[in-house]
Length: 439
Ligand SMILES: [Zn+2]
Image 1 (cartoon, rainbow, N blue to C red):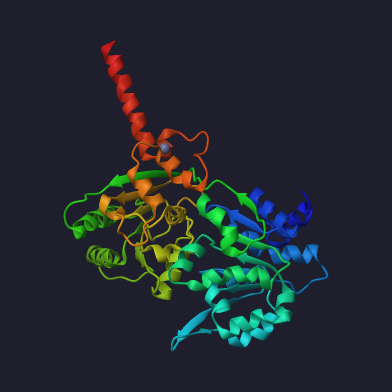
Image 2: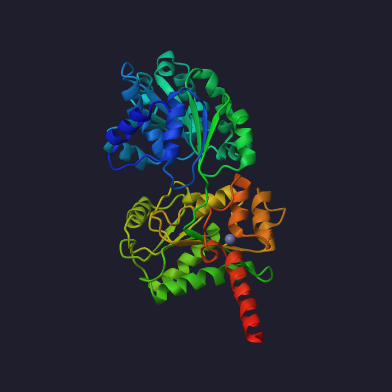
């Protein structure tokens, strides 16, 4: 295909240690050909790199357009990402917002003119900052800015529908953007995109006959396990039995405790944190073997935890978290993900278990559930996660992948697959054993 040598060169010039992957190259080829793209690349594939490299690529392919801007719309923008890009010589900024007296206001008003003049190669924007604030709308009306924008990326696009229908209505307005930037390619990216949503996306985002680039979301180094928890009795006791078991195991042997993220509702996180304090005493995060993460967590705790989890053998072994804090958090050392209850849908589940095994290490994902967790009256609960929990006659991996249009990868042994396949294997062995005895 065209542009292969330019793309290879862009990767080398951006960072010579990155080896471009097939689907990253495919996305970039379509982008340069001016096509709209929907890319479904699993968590850990290197989805962000696809757009981070675009300014470098454009500077190689279109030498006459030195001030090209890539607009990246994302529900979550990490300051670290902007700092990292600086290291690769990519000038980036973010547009965020705050609410004041019922009005949504742009935080970075003083940067609008510089952005319009093409000073930044990548402009990250929250949908609200761009589409709901006066200054954001002003930027979108500037001819100068429109001329500089050579591509638009909608990151985490699986959230657009869900959030647009619920509380962040600016997501619904994203479909107006192709009319503003009418001759540049749009790229919608996600790590978890069910086939049903993929079909709806062109309409939701106003994309023009997009090509689809997909990589199977199957993470073959993650063993999948479903566990019944009691449906009777006190909810408190049920959660307690889950977090206490983990905390006690951690206390027994922190060095051999697998690095684990335990997802729980916020209320029980604080209970578990109190229990950990009781076990380990007062201490600060720099000497602790556990961390508690939630959306408004202290910045020092968050930074220390993120840094520690970059290590191959981090001191922090147990991370208590709610689902919100799990997003955009990318720790390579995690070996186990435990959910004390199912998230509201399978996309979120796939996204969250994708935090394990990022270095390719053998990992596991354990889901505790009962009938109460997946009752029809749970706000926002979706059918795919209900099916995932309820179906006990199928390989768990197949159940997880089917809504995304994939089957389990070839050659995965039963003992590495899931609790269903493993148990089936054991029962077959039992049968074989019984037969032998009879002989
Ligand atoms: Zn299986």
